[in-house]
Image (cartoon, rainbow, N blue to C red):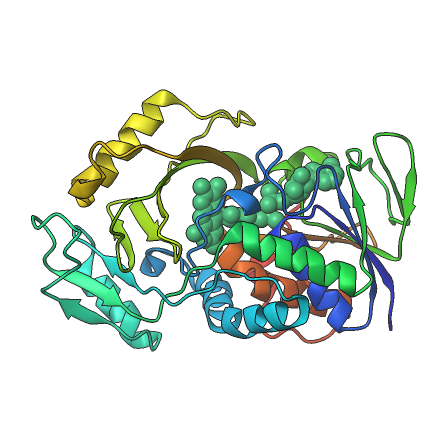
Length: 361
Ligand SMILES: Cc1cc2nc3c(=O)[nH]c(=O)nc-3n(C[C@H](O)[C@H](O)[C@H](O)COP(=O)(O)OP(=O)(O)OC[C@H]3O[C@@H](n4cnc5c(N)ncnc54)[C@H](O)[C@@H]3O)c2cc1C
């Protein structure tokens, strides 16, 4: 059954969902209040670091790990396809992930062994790193990164080439209580009609759905991040004690990020800039005195235990949710898109969908 699906929100989750639905032969429209693949007002997907890995996976539940593992295993193929079919880069590279102490070594090793994640305990590390306190480091050579703004541009281009309608600069109004959804009003009073609707509006999802999903526990969590251009870069992603550094293939270096519960405030602060720079310099002394060439923030769709909601609304016909991916939306988007497209098709799902169900009264 091929139907017309409207996707509300054109971040990574919305765009990846659109791709999965196009592959199934559906007609797809994305409604986005800003512009897809741009940094306008806090959208998370442009702002993210692009690590295709959930930092410390042993801290998360099995359902979260199922989504992130699927993404980590499928981006190679997705990016090759996007690059081949659009001619645009995605920035996917296999840069590996070096975890510096302190961390829970037994839990990390147990997780690697039970998830077939190749790892090594290393003595010698990157010469750019401060020599103190690097033992024992855990090296995971297969971890990849991508460049979120590039990935988003390639996805946008792919969607255009595949006849997805992009209604940009179009904002949908909060949904009123109803039994079945056949049309959704924009702030300008325009009615958008479709057979099915999927909400992928990230940190703004609760604002949009509060009268029909009062238990949807999603709130914005700001992340600030810095950009450097060192003369000699790190050779791999480095993580230490809640802080990471991501070397790009063009020599740039990201350092971040924060987890701030400050509502929809997207500003960046001098205080955080200094804090992040201090952490970066402690790990990589050569950064001392170097200019910070950019500093930005994004609003993650924060959820308890990083568990997204990927579900049909239990009471409103034709309404689906795919939102709340918090810290790992880039990594989770392929699995999450596949799951919601299977729910829309009323097919058996490739993983158990029940942990991602929407709770309502
Ligand atoms: C600093 C930082 C670093 C990160 N690093 C990583 C990482 O390394 N790896 C990783 O996997 N993840 C990372 N993330 C998390 C990841 O970026 C997010 O989980 C992901 O981008 C969420 O995608 P989304 O599509 O749900 O939300 P968004 O990208 O925010 O997209 C939601 C879209 O919905 C639109 N919208 C909202 N309301 C409406 C409306 N009423 N009508 C129309 N459109 C609407 C918004 O404009 C927005 O474009 C990071 C995030 C940040 C902030």
